[in-house]
Amino acid sequence: MSATTAARKRRTASARAKALPRIAPGVLLVLLALCGPFLSPHTIDTPVTGPYMTPGNGAPLGGDQLGRDVLSRLLHGGTALIGGAFLVAVVVTLVATLLGCIAVLRPAVGRAVERTADVAILLPPILGIMLIALAWPGGGRWAVICAAIVLGIPYAVRIVASAAAPLAASGYVEAAQARGESLAYIALRELLPNLRATVLALFGLRFVEATYVISMAGFLQIGPQPPDPDWSLMVRENAPGILLNPWAVVAPSLAIALLAITVNLASTALAPPFVRRTVTTS
Image (cartoon, rainbow, N blue to C red; front, side):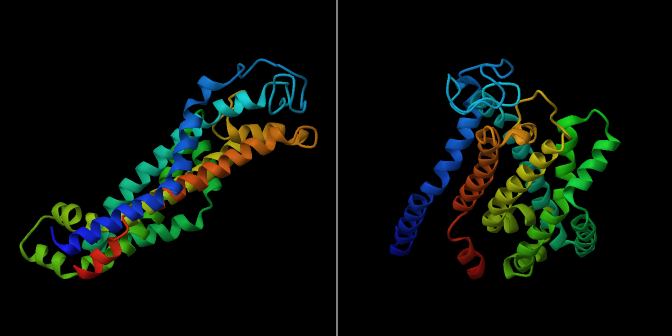
C-alpha cells in the first residue's frame, strides 16, 4: 500500500468520524418516528383529559382539541410523513439523475429539460398539488405524493445536469464516446460515480422539499384527513387552542422542522469527501 493511499484512507476514516454527529440525530429521529406507534402510552382516538388541558394527569404534552393525548398522537403522526417524503425523494432523485446524465450527453434532451424546468419553477408547489388533487378526487395522500414527484423532477434534473456538464466534456467521457460505448455505459460508469456527492445532497434537499410540501398539503387538509394522527393536521386542528396548550401545536411543528433539518444534515454528511478532487484530476 502506498503512502498516498494510506493517507487517503486515514482522511476518509477521519471524515466519517466527524460526520457521525451529523448523521446520528437524523437516524434517531427517523427511528423514533417509525417506532413511535409502539411507544405511545395511550390510543390515538380516546380522550384522556379535557380539551386543551396543559401537561399532567397522564398526558405529558397535555390534550388536544378533543382531549386526546398529544404525545400519543405525536408518536403516531410521523410514520406516514416520513414514508411519503422518503418515497418522493427517492423517485425524484433516481429519475433526475438518469435524465440529468442523458441531458448532458444528448443536447436535444437537455434543451427540453431546461424548458420544462422553467415552466415547473413558475408553478407554486401547493397550487400544483391542488390542481392534481382536483383532477384526482379521492386520491388523498397518494395524490399529494404524485404531485410532489411530478413537480420536483424538472428542477432536480437541472441540478444534476449542471453538475454533470463539466464531466461530459472531460477527456475520459470523450474517450468512451470515441470507443463507441453506449449511452447507458457512459452514464453509469463514467458520470454517475463522480456525481455521488451531488446525488446525496440532492436527496437531502428533495426530502426537505417533500416534507414541506406534504406537511403544507396536510395543513390545508389535502391528503390526510381527520382523525388521522398526522403532524401537519395536528398543527391545524389545535391552532385555535394554542394559548391554552401550546404543546399541542409546538410539538408537531418542532417534529416537522427537526425531521427536515436532521435528514438534510445526514445526507450532506454522507457525501463522499473527496469527490471534487476525483473529478478535477480525472
